[in-house]
Image (cartoon, rainbow, N blue to C red; front, side, top):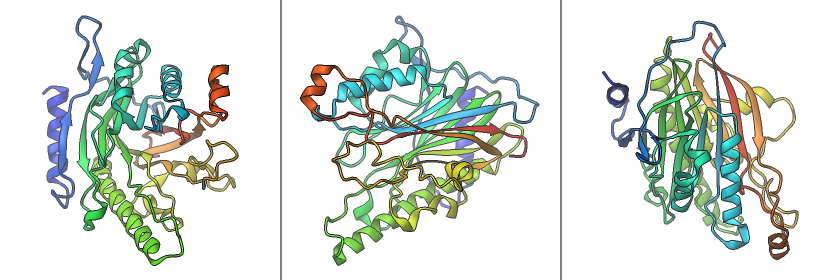
Length: 348
């Protein structure tokens, strides 16, 4: 059986084994893509099984997640930010990168960039569409250090409140590092705008709906993760769920833990007194933005977090003329990136 056929079979088994086939219905399956040179272009990646590692904690996997900010307003220097991202992707020491808010223009830049083509296996060049904006999710796997079997999208529109159904999805990929498999879930959870006046009944009702919606979306991720995590064996080691979770409300700070995940930041830095905030930190001092830990990396299974970093919190070095025009600092995104390294297996 080929790697692709095996992955399809395993995902069919996953769907059959879930408590609600409607809630966990796979929307699409895509084989991963890799650059085959100018003559062939981007083609299906041929997954090749590698021998398993027999030494506890010999294997490690590093994942980075970033909401890259789809904003195209010239005041945000979108081209400069995109080029900065391409530079970071060409140099970062990560096995997997989860990106959110990837636009079609960004995809074209990825496809054409030689640094990108030489390094990354891509879940798909179709990021998916939700809400009114053409942007979505892409997962990248470092072809020099790991493999990607394929990726599936699962709908996040099971919430009973139709107003909260915006077409968002989970992007679920199977990644192989040193012969062992880890499921990687990429997500951008609901972020509907709330009324400005926080003292009104309408605000409280909207806030409650939004919190309930994200809780429901995390529950879907948990059900998918639990099925992969329950396979923990010599070959399957667990699940990493990384993305912009938008958990800004005080009542939902431990939502992932309520659904069986462990929070890599909290495990490593929970007693340090540091906030771990990823939103509101990349703004000029005159901007009043509430700081929050929206971007997270959580996990299940036989994994152990060994390192966690918050990235891209310093302004970009812009052309002096552009800097004078903008009159403010520009960051790679309005979110900071997050990066975690995990030891794989060994009874973590």
